[in-house]
Length: 282
Image (cartoon, rainbow, N blue to C red):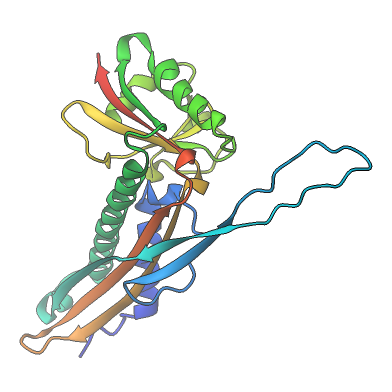
């Protein structure tokens, strides 16, 4: 007899909720092109148009007309992760009834970590060694220079690129958090006027950024952390739990539970991101 209380649709929803709550970088993306994704390899086509030129007008003279041109960028859903675990009949009988749900929550957290690392990697790749890369920055905890040397510098970079002020974010590792938590210019989450929770990694605001803390820092080396700031317009993300199912195992007395996560991401506006290689010193 299979697990009587197992409902695949509810299970999928619970894991997806856990996934979205836990992913710090993933949640900094937009999902404008998500749509319905069924299989690994599906593609979302993103069409953009050139902006018409603005010209001086002289009365009683002919005006010039622009011919709009479009460009297509493809968001390929080519990342596929899965989980699979077994539940022995004896354990199912003797253990607490919630243990399967706990295992599912763990599966969702691990899927979220995989997706978050992937999104961080494509953000980094899009701006590394470009004009959006501020290069090496040393943050000294003792003199609170992080505000000007890091956060204000990133703010300036995004503002010069006409990135909207509302919605700007920055993701920092715990080591950089230590450099700002004692700075009075940092507005912590309890005084920021937001309903976001600390479990999502939200710390507060500084220099116009919503500040998030994460252990996921792409390509970090000993003592150096790649800090990324940006806006939701920069990256689009699409995901779906394609299938979650319980099956009766043929070679033992028990059930198997497995799930598949399909996702992909695309940097559509790299100029809405900024990168810095940060070294922290006391």
